[in-house]
Image 1: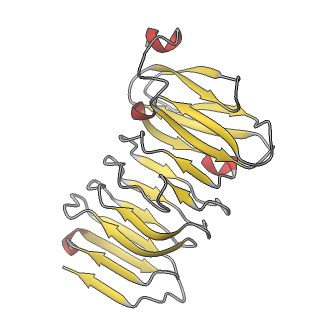
Image 2: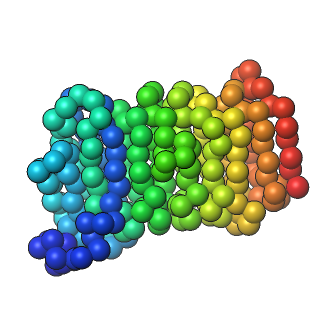
Image 3: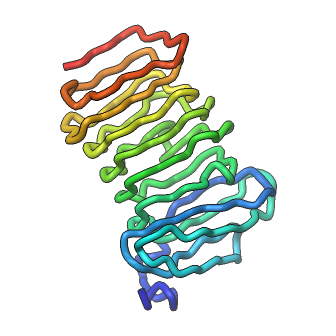
Length: 212
């Protein structure tokens, strides 16, 4: 806690999320952490916002990018982040959030120009604690929805995205609700017993369904 106040923790700055923003409008994040920390967010090079997060409720960070396109926003201490909301306010086209390995909930819905997460389209395999994911209305986020490392999933909302297939963990521990887009062509779930609800967007073009 004190280390992050005085920027002393040596691993803190390398443990960060990168979001490529495309707006001059105010960008607001709600960040909840596992343990108390002075959370750092940089909205552009040379600027740093530092606020106390108590590890119990979310803290609101608001700032502005310097440029209207491809502005790098850095959120530090990724491995201590439990939830983050408001990413759509940055109008991102890509993001590297793999260091947030203990992220429990992620809502990146309504991101119209988002094309890439973790350098492999819709790749969330690094987020082993993830139980709720919302990528609805991200029409340019396509390819494989990779959730292969997410054994704690409970809810996936992907309507309005462009994903064409899915990759789920083979050992899902919870009852899962899955909502998939019209673009889906292939669905494979190796442990169908974990499936609670499966919904498809109108006009779905499903060609292969494998439930085992």
